[in-house]
Image (spheres, rainbow, N blue to C red):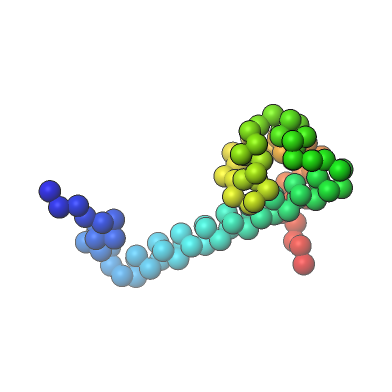
Length: 103
C-alpha cells in the first residue's frame, strides 16, 4: 500500500487558494501561541527576580514538575487554562496584566 502525504490529500480535495488560506491561518496561530508563551515566560521570570524566588521554589509553589517549569521559563510550555490561572494566582496577576500592550 502506498503511503500518501497529507499535502497530497489536501491537493486532491482543495484548490491552491484554499490551501494557501489554511497555511496562512495556521502560521498566524503559531505566531500567536509563541507570543503568548513569551509573555507568560517573561512574566514568570519577572516575578522570580522581583520576589527573589529560585527555580526549585517555583516548582514547589506551583506543585508541578521541574520540566514543566523549565518549559514555561523557556517559553515552550503549552499550558492549560487551569495551569495558566494557577500561575497567575501565584504571581497575583490578572490575564490583562500579562497580555496588555508592551510598547
